[in-house]
Every structure is written in C-alpha cells, then in structure tokens.
Amino acid sequence: QAHLRESGGGLVQPGGSLRLACAGSRSISQNAMAWYRQAPGKQREMVAAITSGGTPKYEDSVKGRFTISRDLAKNMVFLQMNSLKPEDAAAYYCNTNPSCSGTYYVVITCLRSLAQSADYWGQGTQVTVSS
Image (cartoon, rainbow, N blue to C red; front, side):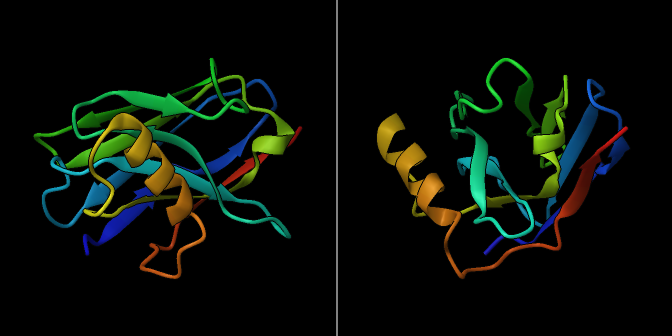
C-alpha cells in the first residue's frame, strides 16, 4: 500500500481557491488515484479521480470547479479547487488501490467504493470555507 501524504488545506472565503497536493512514498503513476472528502457527520465520498492513463472523473458536486492533475516525475497528485462553497468544507484525502484497474467504468466504480474502505488512509488535509 502506497503511503500518501496530503497537504494544502486551509481557511478560505467562499469563492476562493485552494490547491491540494498528495505525495506518494513510492511510485503511484501506474495506479488510478482519487481525492475524497469527509465532512463532520457525513460519509467519506469521492470527489475526483484520475485513471492511470490520465483521464479525469469529477462528481457532479465539484464538476467545473475542481481539477485533478498529477506530476508523474514528482510522484504527486493535485486537486485545484476554485469557486469554493461552504459545503466543500471537509477533510480531504487522496488514495489509491492497485486493484482498481480495468475499464474506465470499473476503475471509477472501484475508486468510489474505496471511500468506504477501512484500508489505509492518510491524515488528510482540512479545508474550511467560511467568511
């Protein structure tokens, strides 16, 4: 299991932007990766994913506002968050699982299901959106 470390969270006003970063302890470029978030009292949910081939997927709640990207040379995945809303406030996590492979649909379904997995999770990075 890749050890992952999230960073970049903070306090931002509604409409503001943040860029989250996820650093892997070993090569993650061959895996599909996803960003998740968990707000207090709510289940963890996937918000964006990127396949091993670089194809992104965004959940409807963040589509058009968030952008997932990666730097293979630096073994990092990023989440650019624009036009932030109070409902975006949560702890954000990145994760991956080598078993999430195959067709695009299979990969995305697998990564979505990973949100409820008890497998390894990093410490996350907190995003607070408030005026």
